[in-house]
Length: 139
Image 1 (spheres, helix red, strand yellow):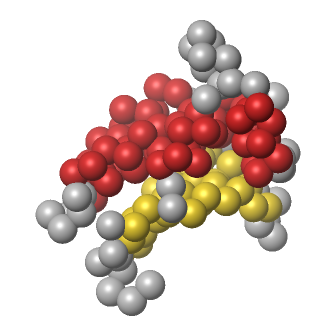
Image 2 (cartoon, helix red, strand yellow):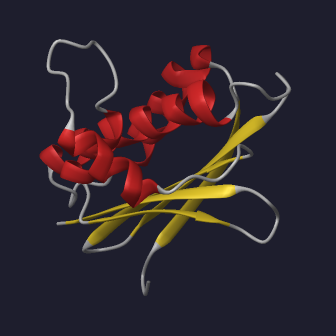
């Protein structure tokens, strides 16, 4: 992306790091990004990081990290969250969730929220055996 700024930071795979992540993200905000987009991306970041810790890293070593990249361009914000867990079919899982959403359940809707927030959403396996969740939001 032309005229974009990329910020990358590594965080421990621990839910206690979420406040630190959100604080870091807030510092990256630019005046031209609509407030609604910032809030939606903040929610997406929280959902993505939480899913990486709770699901992808669930049965793995406690000293793993989650890498987060934020790319800010004049018309778009992209979040990338890398985890070390086993890959899964994001689109298939979303289709499955759409068929059986339990509105009374306190959890289980994070992927649907990510889908609703984003203009582009993907989860791909990288060459270094990590997974990359991409959430892109235009403004």
